[in-house]
Picture 1 (cartoon, helix red, strand yellow):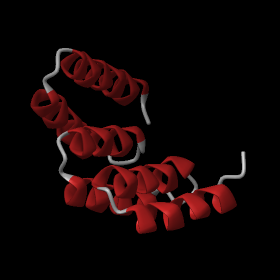
Picture 2 (cartoon, one colour):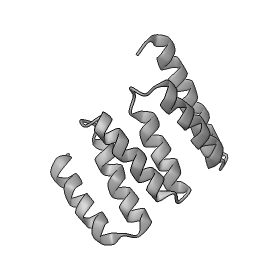
Picture 3 (cartoon, helix red, strand yellow):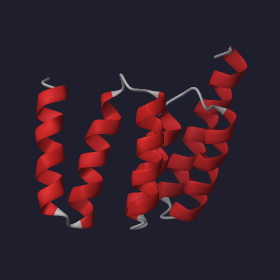
Picture 4 (cartoon, helix red, strand yellow):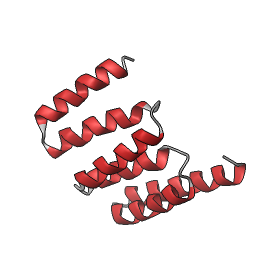
Length: 109
């Protein structure tokens, strides 16, 4: 990632976080979706967009985004952890327990 791309990514992440702090998750999600297109080789926009989608109770969209991110970034433990959160926040306790067991196994620290 070039220095310019890194600066744009950081600026976009800051804008999205500012929107979340204002309670404007729709604006945060729009910014994060733009970052997904601009910075497809960085996991952070995937993870943050999934968090906003969960806040908006769009669990299927969060799940899809996390699955795509996990395929693209298989070494990033954030995707395994956030998929467990999706199941828990959705209220699917059986699936959440299974996923948290996976987190304990794959992310021991």
